[in-house]
Amino acid sequence: MKRYLPFGIVAVVALLALGSGAMLYRAKRLPPLRISKDQIASGKENATSVHVRGNPKAQTTLEEFGDFECPPCGKLADPLKELERDYGDGLRMVFHHFPLITHRHAKEAASAAEAAGLQGRFWEMHDLLYKEQGVWSRAANVRVLFNAYAGMLGLNVERFKKDIDSEEVKTRVAADEKRGNTLGVTNTPTIFINDTAVPPTSLNPLGLRGAINDAVNNARQKDKAK
Amino acid sequence: MTAPRLRIILYTVAALISLVGLAEATYLTVLSLTGETAVCGGSPDCFKVLGSVYAKLAGVPVALFGALAYFSAFSFATFAAFGYERAQKFFPVTVWIMFCVTLWLLFVQAFLLHAFCRYCLFSAAIIFLLAAIVVISPRAE
Image (cartoon, rainbow over the protein chains, first blue to last red):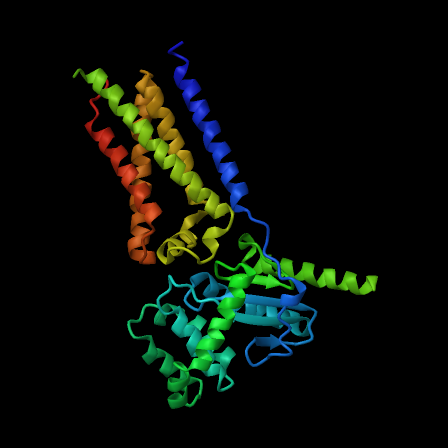
């Protein structure tokens, strides 16, 4: 009997490991977040506080909740621009700030983008912050770098310095965070395509392309049905 | 205490320690499979490590290999505790392979990613303990 006992112990542990792993996997795979119709950001009626790139009338909207200091968001910045180029007028991009408290400069970076936005250069600063993420995220004094970026983008640096600490900028960032919290966003990047969040496993160029294609096909089918 | 008795105690302890490692590696495998390591939300350093290219090997999470390694170590330690001679030979080999992989992963964290993940450090501590058990356990005659 004792001879076979270790086989039993090992088999029980194998089953327990597989079973608990499967249970944990099911528990972690939550249903995707959805945006209800009344929460959809159109980007048309309030364009001063919603950052929209692309055709405002496009049938497909990609809405990102991002954090400029989050490495996966940085990794996705270029693929998202590629998608924007490839889909042209068929895709509208919306960006919302969702600076995580675990990233020490994320909120300041969001403010820098908004301050640039007050001078009409939000997307330029957005792209630059992602491109230079590895530099400023490690810096002790990010303000010096952000001011330099403002200069590079041809902004009025003195105004930028004032705007970055202004109530208007803080309110805009807070509004984005509030929207994210309302929708149940907890991680970055969280990307909604039309009204459904893309699962984290598909947050890559191929997965996003597939999700956009699905959304485009769904929209076409709806149009045909009408 | 006689050498065989000490061996049984040490193998039993090693099996229990391997179980802890197995639980942790299983958890990390699930995090990777559900895509939680592909986004930011928890400890930035952990996500930097677990979301890096070094956290996957040919698309398979390294944590899954870790879980298999811990399960092997647990199985060999259990069989060794029951006196199976082959298991007493395979257990140290498994632990030393895990030890070498751990050194590589610590190198990656320290010099390539410049970030340490607490889960990975905990796993490294477990493997160092297993290596210590291999070193102090008396040789089988």
